[in-house]
Amino acid sequence: MPDYFLDIEYNNIVYGEQEVNLKEFECCTFNHCDFSQCNFIGVVFIDCTFNDCIFSGGKINHVALRSVFFNRCRIEDVNFAMCDKLIFEIHFKECVLDFSKFYTLKIKGTTFTDCSLVAVDFMAADLTEAIFDNCDLYRSEFAKAKADKANFKTSYNYTIDPTKTKLKKAVFSLNEVKGLLFKHELVIE
Image (cartoon, rainbow, N blue to C red; front, side, top):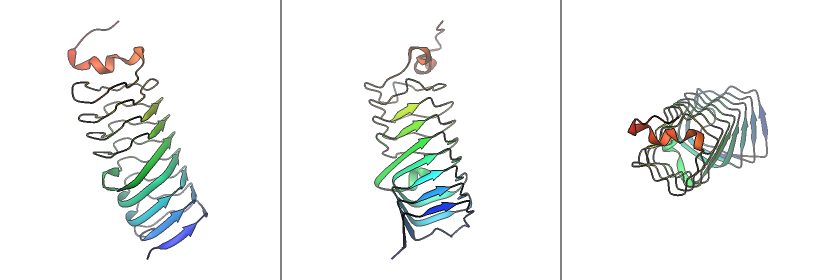
């Protein structure tokens, strides 16, 4: 049985490789913590918030994220694809997620607000009703993804091939529609 922690605030902690393994955190807040050296195994976060934390390069292969909020976090080159998929719910605000992977994940309704999502792998992910609010999606990959009813209206720098991505009723701005037509090599003025 994992160690259980409820409603605790953690501040300015640098976690070692196995320090959080086999632990369950519920309604906890992490402020200015560094998880970049962690190799998460059997870790559960339920209704937790991470503020100004670092996950870049961390191995989150065996972690459950259930209603988790990341605010102003650095989460570069992190592979979310191997996370526990039971009740998987995450939200990001003002985060850097460059080079991270959400390959094949069901992340319906996920919100990305004011995030850098450069070269993020969303291939074959279910992004139904996801919200990309003012996000930089430069070189992010959406092939075989399902982004029905997703909202890209205020985001920019995306290149999404509508012949390879399901986009039924997805919302885009007229200014950025060129990101849907890139493969046709059209000049839009």
